[in-house]
Amino acid sequence: MIPIWDGSGYSNGLKGEQILITIRIVAIADVFDALTSVRPCQAAWSVGETLPLLHRESGKHFDLQMVELFLGCLPEILVIKERWAEQGLTGCNSCLVDLPCTGTLMTLQTWELLSYIVTVVALPFALGVFLFEQRKERENEEEAIWQQISDAYIDFLEVVLANPDLRLRSQAATPDLSDEQRERMWVIFDMLISLFERAYLLVYEDDMDAKKRRRWHSWEDYMREWSRREDFRARLPELLRGEDPGFAHYIRQLAAEEQQA
Image (cartoon, rainbow, N blue to C red; front, side, top):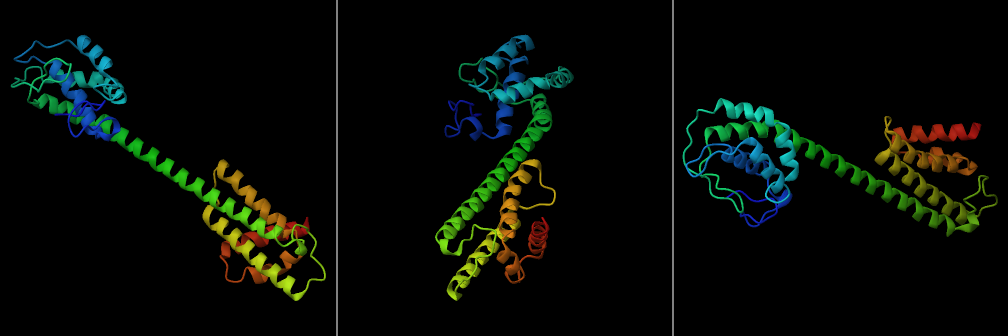
């Protein structure tokens, strides 16, 4: 038995999108073909009589979206039915719940209808769903990355605030530092460069779209802000030793621009 969209059919109570898309299409095509064909147990329905039933059962017996797609290619389906008008029919489908008896054996006509619908409707639709889900998954992954690096920068600022004696939020170099203070500052600068490089490698692209570029501008602003600090700029050659060449070139360029500003 073919599963029913609302889960009232067989196949372990599958319902909705748990049912394979091809099965959802078969359910519509089989009923349409059976009702509009002469059967030993009943006269054929007209297309005009059958369509209201498909509409009525949409969302209950059938997938509403699949019904709309099926009806969208109805002219081509009727051409196939016309070509098979003289084909003899045998047997009878199992009776469907609350639907007229539709016979038991699929005819060659039914199989051709199914083949056409799967090719014209199911494959493009399935591809579209796949691409949509892939894009959505990528967007979710990108959102998680942005959130992760943003949280990391907030954590870094907490380290900055925990060292007020270094006066790291000023643009001018902090004078008269002790060896211990200077060592702490270098460690904090190392942490900052690692964070900037991580952000660059994870999210920077030469051909970013408008949304990504707006987000990246926030990170570029952070880099520019720190590059205005004299001792940070002076320390860059040491800080960038062994770092990604693309990132090193990028932040050196920003630092040069800020120094000339």
